[in-house]
Amino acid sequence: MKKFLLVLLALIGFLTSKSQSEFGFSIPKGERRVEIPFENYNNLILVKAIVNNRLPLFFIFDTGVQTSIITDKALSDMMQVHYDHMYTLAGVGEHKQFNVFLANNVSIDFPDVSGKGLNLLVLEEDYLLLKNYLGTPVHGILGCDLLQNLVVSIDYDKRKLIVYDPDTYRAPKRAIGIPIVIHDGKPYIQIPIELIDGHKVLAKLLIDTGASHAML
Image 1: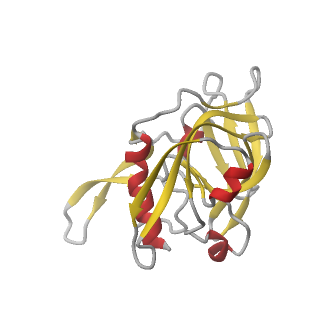
Image 2: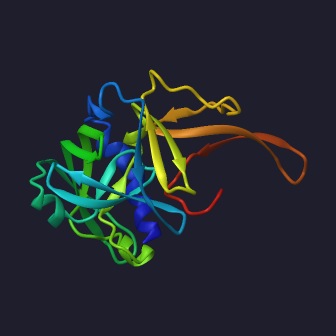
């Protein structure tokens, strides 16, 4: 499953670079912050969202993924998602090839957080089987679209995503700012690392909430 997911994610940038959404996520005008509850499974953030104003689905919030994914086309068909393109891609292991559909202008909504005009990748079948890994229903992956227009804070103790209006957000007094570089729609930080031989290098690290390990 892990190898298949890596192949899929490597292709996402190519598939979506041709069709970028003009909209994104927002909170109601006049609101300074909104809280989104989540469940924590194996250090992965699982949130519930409504897709196309129809069904509630459970997504892993993964900042290492550029574009959100629904893992089974049968679900997106029920929500009347319209597909713009279909790609047949070479797979790995038992998946010799698989079909991925690209949809535009999809809505993904949380209470008081609205996502409009989003790109979405849909797998023809649930090749990832994320439910088997987490032991709870998982219908897709929410990519870093959520970070594009909003300030996002993660409170693991209270199990809440807190999203802020960037125009009114003020960082806490004791907060330490770390510059973030956005590359191919994904967030990175650069930090100095000292190797065993004493040599120092500047490492570029992906901020990836979809990885249950601290650093790789």
